[in-house]
Length: 130
Image 1 (cartoon, one colour):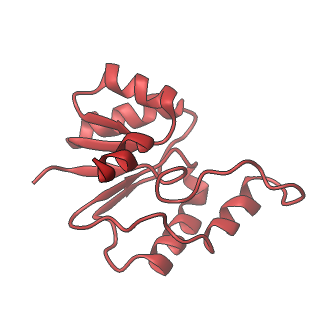
Image 2 (tube, one colour):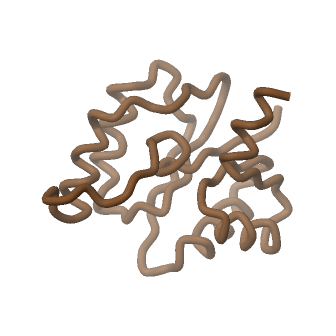
């Protein structure tokens, strides 16, 4: 079975512009706990996010609230590294074979710096309708 991982923001949680008057990242991530996932992965899956490690409790709270099929692992330890580099390092170190990402620039970087199959979320969604 392939080792599959999904980005969180823009893939599992809807991507959105900053909400006026809501504050910073602390308030935004707290708000995401109430956001329903865009879909529920089946089988064994992993989550890989560039959210800073300090937001891990909020991310895990969101997952416990919305998923029966919890991820087999959550990589959430970025610390000063660029998101694309962090994700490439995690994918390479953990044998991720398929990764779904929402940011086109990160997709391009990962395609150059990993052996995994990297799919932009728009293409992932489009594959359902072929």
